[in-house]
Image (cartoon, rainbow, N blue to C red; front, side):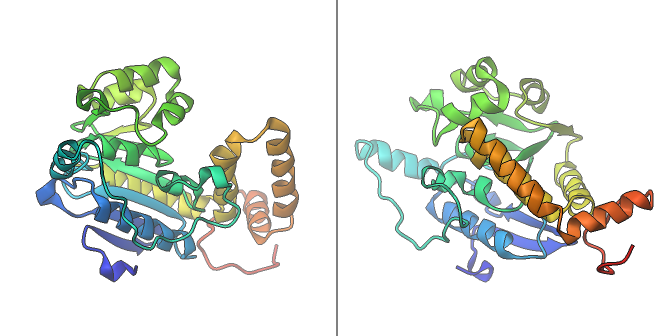
Length: 281
């Protein structure tokens, strides 16, 4: 699937930052099979595009109100039965362990950081999507809810494993056990949101932060660190340690390392998007 085929979202790229915007405001960006399909393809195109260093995902109006209520009603009427969409999906990045090849885990396996910029409602499936981003910014007017307990559902799509590792067990329980919406301030206090933003500015602030990463942080460093934080966090410590040494030895011979050292010697910040005079001091 090409970005021009998207019907539920927009994908744009500028200055090293790709923005994925859910674009069904009339449905409050309700989640469904088509949205899930397009989101994975959008992330794939960000992963393989060398011009993309960081991704910001957001929604027009609401972030995502949750699963489409009509689809939920159909599932309930059918006694819990539902059809799995068999549409073609992009493959996982090379080296992704078999146990991590799950659709919702896909954002954590790609080579670029994903920042969720949350405004309006973020509930249920929207909460899942935002949880599988690396970092979350939220407008101070956002309403955030897991919503599962009000529907008789469990912590969906691995959140019972993921959330405690993000915010601790007690805070994960506080988020999951109640379906009542919480504010961005409360989500910051629990550790789920990393930055609360003045209403209406979450996207702009997230993009500005993403640009600062695109310019000031090595794309290769971000790729290696992301793999260490997520995929390799499930490794045995000795294996994760060994991998980190291999990454370090490889990085010491890279142009990014030389660029960083030149900037350090020149007492300036590096710019990894600027044209490089390779091999100069």
